[in-house]
Length: 322
Image 1 (cartoon, rainbow, N blue to C red):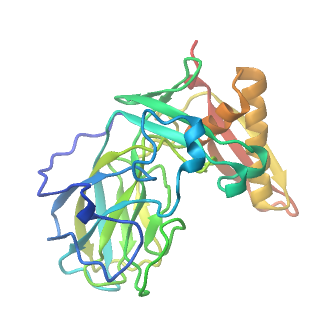
Image 2 (image 1 turned 180 degrees about the vertical axis):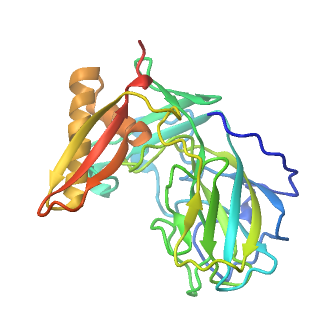
């Protein structure tokens, strides 16, 4: 995806060597690096399950993948002058994949993803990533716009904290619009902020419904600044998008989920989209679930017409071959 060219010089490089990796949020961790405001850091990030899946992995291997721990994060980086009550400004300058990635969903007994009860067996697709395109099945091509799924600073509360849920200080937010050119604002709760990132995705549908985007090892380059003129309680951001998979308005096919419960409505919208992809596009139900996680956007269409709420799922039709 084309973005505005930004000139910068990399001041620091943080590799994915073990000494720069941690898998829990913990404000007692020593910084892997301390930088000045304005410095640019290039982070080398491992994939979400820390190398347990590679290009040779098959779906039969998936039940052996452990989530303990998950989300190896590169960092933490301390930024000089950042104090509790400040805001850490993180300008995302570049996100570069390494040529491959994967979508996976897990056996139903693990209870992961939006629809674990619908898929007893696991599913897996290994993606060939070429530039800004990922290859799926049946000639389907997904536009790529990489972003870090997990990005944040250390919480003020002492102890170790699981990386799976997002927090006031960021973390596993999976905001797919935090792409190159975006600026993220994080509330600082500890001295230096202690910033870390990882769990990168080459592409993702809003919702990440099967529990993975296109998970990929990646390089993330960011410029840091400290904002004492801002006061926020949870992360905020500026972004250029893209707000559709191709970055322009394009034909979409939509399904709706309507229910008196937002999560139930969400599940209905995705189930209806899986039905559509299976019946009209010839995908297996497992392939359809993976495609929904990689390329289908969920939107809350209304939350005011009690007693029922509407969630819609949007499928870009440009991903299919002519």
